[in-house]
Length: 466
Ligand code: NAI
Image (cartoon, rainbow, N blue to C red; front, side, top):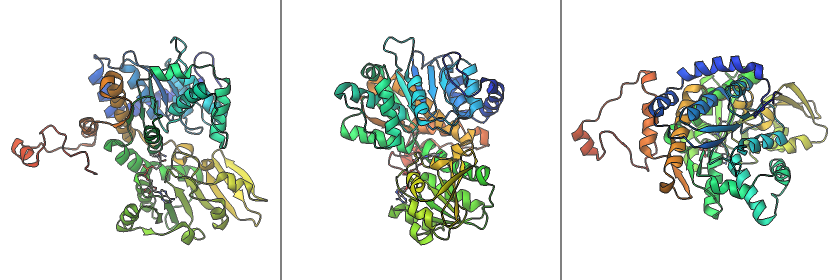
């Protein structure tokens, strides 16, 4: 690892390769590049000290450099132990941005990286004034730190993740309460992180305002869906190179991610089966032409199993024991608790073998093998490179506009959880039309009046679902 100054990455010599891919990505990220141009002079993020905790990929590098171009100082960590693209991290470090991320961190290293991203050496309190989060881990660490300082109580060590947080807090010298007091807000990228924020708001424990970027239409209806439609098969292919056509694939969950995943595998010619707990999503899946049934019904016969629920305990060890030889099991939801990896490891006589990084076979005592991708962590980032640039340009344009909102208008956002105002959501979509050759029809004033909107938008009421 290279850590000569204020960063830690796998290999700084990958910086040139990273820079070349960042340059290619910039052209595919018209939303971010347009925002750079629009705000170059105004510098709305001048004075912002942004701690980012989000997969350190090529696309994220373009986001980081956009924040910097708008005046921000930035420190970064990845939000998953397997998701960093080492060449992207190297290029960002070489450009002088403190980044702490490499592919294949241990959990202890992961939380150390998050702490480094939250540590601002030249600030008297030592922390950021903004967080840009994906899954909520940076936000969680600050909240757990404050709780520890207040009550002297460490987080319980009943899961691996929290045990690592506990270890970190025991040794950390950061002033968590002081840091939390300086934070103007957090912008949160994903469904699972947003869940955590609404929970804290409900319990009255949320310490600063938050923008739920995930539920911007140009985020969840694009990144979660079309992004996964691209990167799910990419992950399965890079991991296994197995032919998908003709196989039976089970997708657990038919939310935004599940919809994209189902389409992705159907596009490859798989017979796709959905499991759901929500009658609305189950009905949607049925109307889209998929069989909807329970895992129990198909666990012995399907070839591929993908979890997309953001919920826990979806595929248990006892399920995996029933699967057929060389069934493929993977998760694309944010956390690794959808597949019971701990239970799998506890099956007497089971043998785990590494085929290559992030691809493991598990051999049962009777000789049956299943293939588990990325140890149950999100496989599109573990086995492939996540979503492509164009779709991330939408998500990250939302992120950037959300950062500007919270940083420049603190009075308009008292502590609570907000979504991006609709005019900004529409703006982000608009920024991506030219690149795809889309010609938009302009509303005539009398038409606008007839449907009760302004010619320049917003075009839909807040309850509209797209
Ligand atoms: P969502 O809430 O739209 O969809 C999840 C679906 O799973 C819901 O329809 C829910 O009813 C269903 N579900 C819950 N428990 C279930 C169970 N026991 N069995 C079957 N279905 C069940 O959420 P979304 O946006 O689709 O996100 C899902 C997860 O993916 C989240 O953890 C999110 O953070 C993550 N995510 C991952 C991305 C990636 O690139 N890997 C990209 C975007 C989101």
